[in-house]
Length: 411
Ligand SMILES: *Cc1c(COP(=O)(O)O)cnc(C)c1O
Image (cartoon, rainbow, N blue to C red):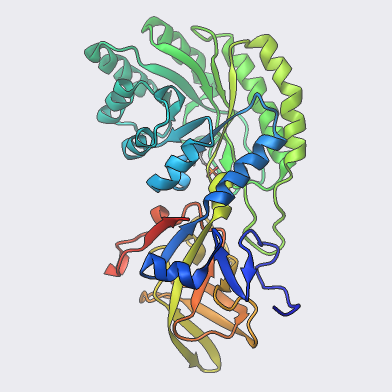
């Protein structure tokens, strides 16, 4: 290896030996042969272990960790995560089945998402998981289905807070939102839960996603605890669950710094005795998706053509936005920026050049790397997109243009 740092540095969670990336200790070329096709996603279970251990080491031990499986619902990965975290959060009946298959105890599964339909609510009640209620209609439907089944639904209230998570990639609370029940309408909903004699677990307050600013998260946590303590005055029973959301981000782009957990941990340490005194039965839960799995995954596509158009070099691969919409810049980005990309089997290379890496789709949106400096690559080389463990395959339009499907492996 030369002294030149690969362009993705410091994203060095996957080691490079003899200029070839390793995933779970296996050289990428060998892994590609083992998978039997390109493109594929690979997730490294040791990196999943490491991330959860890092969080547990930094955060107060009383904080429970939940994995929000919409970030990556691959069944083998969810099963692995189920052994590491304290609970799973699902957002559909399909995800609920994956969570139950993974062996997580129903008492530690919660179900959020607007517009839960009667079959979803009925399944949640039958499974005995916690339903995060997002409207009066959901509450009334759950109560009716519970009576029909002869089961008491376990419920929590998802609150649309009266504040926002600042500097967040995606805001999911504050102002008018389809998510949750507006904080000012929560007392009436709590009274109704009491009248209908449903099991009341507590509150779910989720404010946003992909935040790299610790001080913004600290401020959101302050507002969240204050709001929960206020709402608890109208609760029909003791608060047993206080889900304070997540929103922890990961670095994707040049200049992004990893989230500093220390101020978040210090602030939680400060709040826990207050919660303990006012809501003695409450378990405080952080629910995280991207932060737990995003950095553990790679997307790998193969160069199938190389062409020069009016002085500009294009590498055309067999993978693209149909498998990885986020890397193409079309999932939540306003201005397109390159994800970290390398040529996985020649990370530094001997010669380097500026190229644009595209997929095979007949649309100018199908870009994996735009004018990026990479090792000089040719047909058969493997293009790797880092930070691909979350919102990858299942967040992509896989049917678009009818190309062959992608596979996923847990290594
Ligand atoms: C999407 C979502 C998450 C996960 O968000 P990340 O940014 O991936 O951590 C957690 N909870 C709820 C309710 C969600 O909708």
